[in-house]
Length: 449
Image (cartoon, rainbow, N blue to C red; front, top):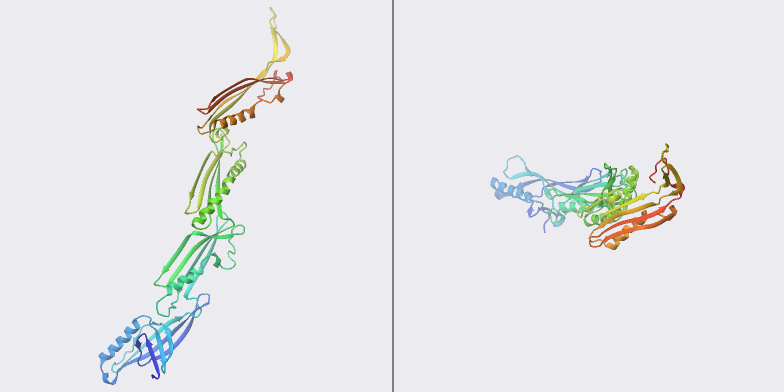
């Protein structure tokens, strides 16, 4: 049975066992949080020649080479025995430089070196790590952009000696990603409007240095009270005939990544598209429009989508020109109202040799007036002809005279030309009426009413 001390580094045995100085340091991060323990064995030993080899330099040099090769072989298991009982094992120190003392190498060579290993005493498997959270309000003051960066250098914790610093760093970092790991109380100053949720954005950045055993991630979030963000601009323009056009250009950005962002953008569009007409009307009134902005039909419209970025873009314009706002399917429409108003009737009598001219007599009556509604309409070939007739009828009846405004009113002409093959209709309708004599103009200010 062996007695005394024995020391092995891998398969190499230190004979004799060197003098050992053992120090243990607690390693802290920059916040003085404990990370791990670092053990250092300072060795002071000698390579000895047996009596049979005394004075043989070649023997000492060969033993010196064996020690160098052992220490250069990488992280090997360290074992210490005392009286045959194992005292230290399962650790794989990193050797430092071995120094051989300057002296006459006859029977021995003195040397010093050190062995170092780290103990994951606090079970976080890392040597060091850093983490930052950056919060920035968006220009719209509705959302907040968040950038989270975390990186770590791993600790080798494999008992077999296979270096696992990188995998330990990666596991540590991945365990701290995601909005659930945001630091308490954040954001403290930058804010999104309302009660917000966090949505991870498309950009992710990852860095890996296997040799250095380091791993890092940067992830970006949007804080928002809704599932999408809607931004738009308004343009108000007037042409040389006084026709006003209001245009809206907008983008709807869904929050989140991949299909989630796109589905949220589409859901947002289904809401926003119903609001566009009222948005345009509001812009028309606020920016100076004093007539009617026709929002039943678009003057122009376009929409685009990006399924990858989750963005829906649209452009819509409206005008207050009635002629440009025909129902979908009707190409042309014109309607004219001609009111030939009655005039007071006078009788004129010529008297020969009368210096004052004719004798004019008011016979206390007036001519009949006529009101004519005429026009035409053309529809697309695909348009239902009966629908065209119904729509034209509604326009005529909106302008036809009402009997309550006249003494007498009668329909005296109705000329309708219908061409179903070409989807056209022409009309000329005449009403004849009389007015109370007191309302028939004689002279004075001319009114067009």
